[in-house]
Image 1 (tube, rainbow, N blue to C red):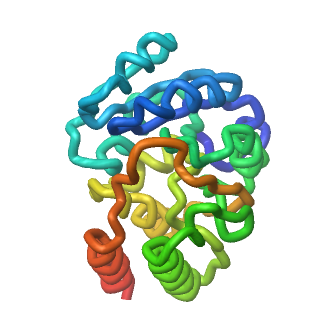
Image 2: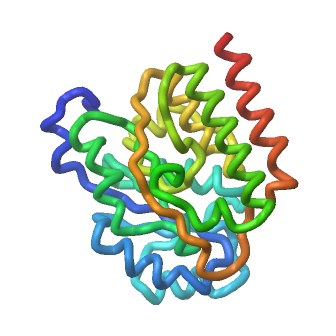
Length: 236
């Protein structure tokens, strides 16, 4: 696929991937909201034990079960099975604004970026300022952003938000290996190392509308730190 010719991107179709794990309270609403923006819509389920898969099937959406290793495996599988040149990833908890999908797509279609991430820092977040745990998550995210910006000489405001649009061929070329949500910063660091263009657009993050977050800051912060250090060491 030619990533340099502007006109070739204008009419690129879109696959929307919704990774899920026990999101029966919100999945129906999320799927309904994203359908108008998807040429192809796929739920990739991490072996949910509730009604998530049933609800998605009833909505007429294709459901693929991954290996249950985490969000990273869902993202890799999504890139592999997507039929279209652009892949949008959106969380299943209702925290993202589906109507922002055109904003994510625009820089790719205009040949200005290969990965576009919704920025909570410029779009606002109800999550990041809710309690002490979220404050810690915000602080950690900012430090990681600063590290990435300094190392790769970019000015990104959010590298970890799961709401993003990716040129499929670029995503596949990165050979990502992370199984947890650390894949989101891995994607950015590998993309910048490979010369792909990463951009942000403002997008508001809402508090999840149901269920419980699968990311427990106290348990995963070491993974995030070690992941950044590994990539910094490899590039020095």
